[in-house]
Length: 347
Image (cartoon, rainbow, N blue to C red):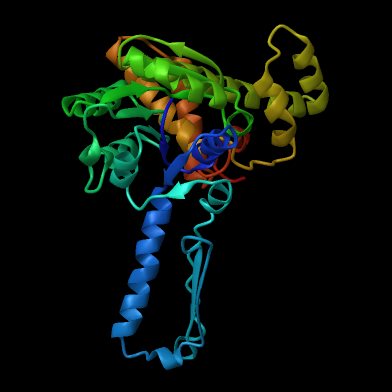
């Protein structure tokens, strides 16, 4: 993979993945939606203050912090009861320290880089980054490669692929199996489909971010495989939650249940990793619950398209929806345990 690599999206997964690229010697230019939005808000606020009746003499504190980009903006005005407005752009700090460049728009990233990787939260975000003003598509041309590693439906992947290739670019979908820790450790499983030449060129980067890459053929197959995997994972998490609750209500030790499971035929890393934190009610997000519920919804839609009945997945999706209604969407997907334990919605 010659030349600079662009990376769009610095959430839990994207930041870890781009950091691995930097640590292994890749030159990386990054962009993040949150950073761009907060920058606009902060500088718009300064502009509005300059036009308002509040004189800057009334502002006791106006500070901009950060290395190469604004990290926070604090404004305190005695006339507005020491109001503080702060914008935190810390997503880029560590990456910049490791040599990353920061671009203002997706288009700027694509213009600068031969290869651009996107890791975004959902289909809407994936489409927005490509098609909106200053989006990636504006600078796609012959020889540019666009690799979307977001978890989306096959229709979204196909739409992006058609747009990229219509301008002479190359497209590869490459969603990943794995959450925060595997992303940090470079142990993701990459499910790629699309342009085989781009896949082969991307293997050096994939080898840094993941432990195994699969090429699944035409565009859409990667998205479908990822949805099947996450549908199984979400259904397993619901069954696991029910098992922990049943053991507890039956007077059995939850920890002993985990020990028994770890020695049996259904032992798996997810139970081993999530079980102790669920018992402790520690739901620090490695994979946000709202994203798991989105994947369940997309998997069920895929089932409808193929006339596949999935009652277990459907029931699991309802539990995730319940958890979101309880305000647990930004917590780890294992927080569905609370929705299963308290079906009436009061944790």
